[in-house]
Image: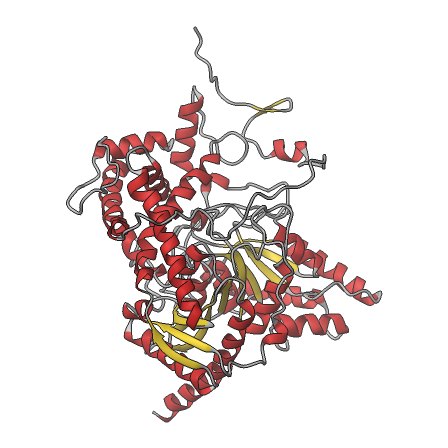
Length: 487
Length: 109
């Protein structure tokens, strides 16, 4: 098997040098070998994938061009609706549910020739930072199976990190793409809010949720975002504009760009992570960017505001799981008991905790002090970013304050888990794009991710800097390997 | 349930067991006794942390409900195909004819 990248596979399949069926078989074989340990997937569809790949090969033999992702295997986070596969959001309350429609991103993948391989594990309803809150068991980090992959899109991050698939989709409400990307050593991008349609994404916190790509390279992430982005009439929050052109930006470099390193987000980071962020800053400076430290004090209030706003929206969104139209029902003599018993049995501990938090923050007597105040802090966070972006094109920070932590180590204390998202949440509150790029490792060889943040619709500039860091990272990793060999 | 207009609970204040039971009822969650106990401690801890938002002066700040400045999005009110009824009902826990079936809602008397 040649290069395992989406761009190389698609090129080979379109040129007739590779068969989509062989790629699908290779993917299924990798999953069969590695997934019993990793548990990245909740559902794999070998028959559908092979049938679909065979159809693509036939079309290419007839001279047709199925699209930019021809024959590329893609894994989907299990909160993306698929009409031919179960969709559970890793919750017992949706166990076995088969949606009657495809999410818009799924339709767009199919229209571009991609082969959907299966559905990936996640924290239940995307609530968590370790993929341990899945009703169907945890996912393991391929760099150290005793550690978490991060979350909530941990399955998608692992599927790419372990080279099971070249591409995967996740969703990011407070860091759920970027944090697992960092902990697994892959590229993960949260686009500008509204850039990608949320139609068919199982809602967690609707004003924060955004779908985005996982890939091993910046170029692969860019092509996947180009394919799924763009206006959709089925999502009223979808931005009415052309999808961004990213691939043609990757070799433009960062000469003359201004980059601010956000001190508030660097403060709490482990020394091993902070060192890599400093190295990334140097790398951008050496490539011609003007890099300096900057301060956005209000960002320290992002996490407390988020843990009022996101649970509030979740408590409303998850009211729909009532045992009536789909999913689990626990029978009872009256409707209210049926609702309460169904939800008690169907939801896991973290989901209940967030519903309780959100219901409390919205309840009479607490609304002004908690929910409304958090919405005002959200405004202040947006203002803080706006002021920074008057001076800088991009901001740089750690993606996560730590590298991958041991399974089970943060489960007993919800607040310690929530702190995993301290660097990623600000961009969700603002609706801005941000991405994590692998940049070296800690002393144990665990991947470190650095985060690039940009103002709304700043994806094109963001991927230019990401490409510079990526080029330096492969060099840096090689240097590290040589250093280790000499020791 | 104590009423608070602008002052959040102080760091020493705890959410009570009664409040947890009340909120669970509002949220249609029939929590076990063990869960009530655990959530009482955990919610207090998270709420103490979240109370930091009170430290910022927001007297003149407008709240943000949505990150993008968007106005109402309108479309022509034209009929278009909806979801396939059989496929939808096929996924329901209980149906009768073309309807979702639920336990009795209205009392017997």
